[in-house]
Length: 163
Image (cartoon, rainbow, N blue to C red):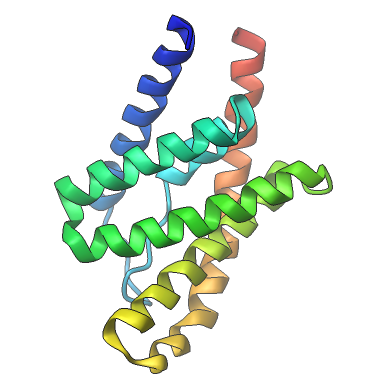
């Protein structure tokens, strides 16, 4: 691995952790328990397009593990890991098809992040009634996915002009 690539890994991992921390500081009215903006996912989407899926996986994994240990505890880590892996897997597949824009890929990531989390939550608490939250989570996953996709597209445009 080249020095420049190592620097990108470190920079993007730090940014993802920082974005997750900033998100915890933003008070949002919780219509659905566990709902978040997904600011750290901006970094994962950027890495997916700026570098590759392997780098995005690594950055996502480092972010989830460190943020979980620092801020969320074991349950939060478990839910976040499930959502992150599910989301990244779907985003990687959709990106490879070249049929979806970065915004479309980001929306799918937001939706499948919520699906992954709610599935794990239902298994952990052994209560299928948690699925009642799913329509609300999917709506917010689409909304935040659009915002994250727009921010990622704008940032990538800037990075591609500068680097």
